Amino acid sequence: MHSSRPVSFAGADRLIVPWVAQRIGMAPEDFRECTAMGVRMGDELLCGVVFNEFRPARFGSSMQATIVQERPGWATRTTLRDMFRYPFEQMGVVRLWVSTSRRNRRARRLAERLGFRLEGVARRAWDGQTDAHILSMFPEECRWTDRGRGQENGKEVRAEAA
Image (cartoon, rainbow, N blue to C red):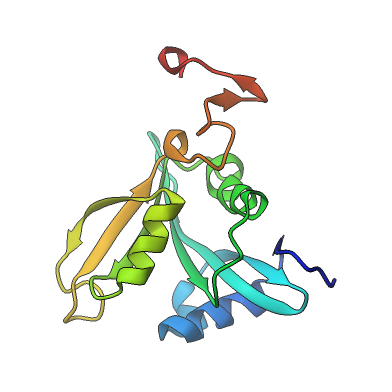
């Protein structure tokens, strides 16, 4: 598929997981059980997202997202909606989180622009020497999905009813 604008796609874990892993210095198998999505323009992969660490719980579940961009220009409303629908609408997680090296300011800025909020610092959690920033997002905070925009099933929901 050739397109002059970014297009999101899923079902290509064999392509996306190694691509993401290589760019952050991991082995693909480090992600274990995961689901991946990508954003491409033509044949070029612009962004890869790996969702893993899904933890179902009786009172709420969580999932980790690893987001790697090759270059800017991939984040359209449509691609972001597709990206955040998976954890929040399909999997029903109540907390999506990312971690970045404390030294990687670009990654933290990207996460914050997507809507993640800094939760805290995990000491020496990145590589045994470098601290990690932990950022998270709840479904109602995600401006890319209907629920985050105050809608449910296509209908607006008042804050006090949510």
